[in-house]
Length: 286
Image (cartoon, rainbow, N blue to C red; front, side, top):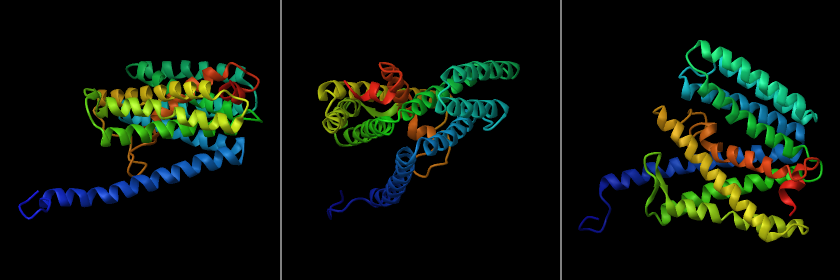
């Protein structure tokens, strides 16, 4: 503060710049949420199209991040393969989906090995395919599929929002300064525990699910969201990148926005194995 009680010019200008950035970030988040919710609620086929489009973007961003060349042959194989996996899951053929995934992994391994290494391309395939497998499978439940995805989205978004808010308002020690300098222990703790309220709310609406158990499931999913965020930050730091792309105004790339959701989807799919015939029920009813 100056003697007149006003902020220095530099701080005033910095605050002015941040306002439109925050507005753009919020607007982008609203658009993305509307697309995800609309496709999820409308039909399994609409959700399938959304997931396939997302898998293409993820393949491109992973190639851009780890190989520096974006949509090359490896990315094309991954995108087509993951899209095929999504279609096979949606028509009830997980056996063929697993076979397709193995074939795509082999093709990427051969292609990438010739160009200098297969570890990162195969990691990118797993990063895209496993969440897609879980998400499409959950939505295939005719009774609770849409509800299961809405629950998963609510947990992921609550984790992200609560972590950001707590980190800004409370601050404190850094969680992993070498990986993600902005993340704090306060954000991690609040972001991991707050989604318990989401589980409690969904259990209250579903009525035949235990509120306590679904709240604990929500905390587990929130922890996986935090892990996904840290893993993506570590990969970006490994390759010296701030964002995976500039596709989404205010957020960077699609991977920057859904990194936590991808890991949470994998865990949700594993939990849903409690009832393979009804994966939505396996995730939600306790």
